[in-house]
Picture 1 (cartoon, rainbow, N blue to C red):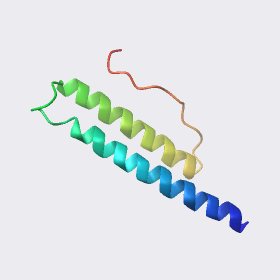
Picture 2: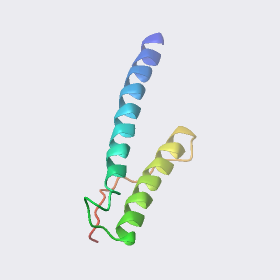
Picture 3: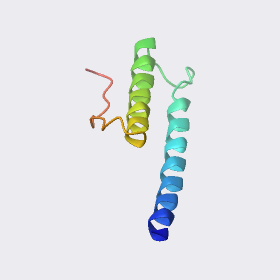
Length: 75
């Protein structure tokens, strides 16, 4: 049982830290001096991130599984 806990801790720390780093990199895209984007692009990005976070939360707290989907700006 202890091995499963250790594995969870190791994977959780690595994955959450990687996700935090990637979210910060996405935040860097908000620099209007370097990038051109619309308010709608920003809404799509934040909506997609929130949807995935909500899906992960529901998986932890027993509300079911979210659907896997790929993010695209141009739908």
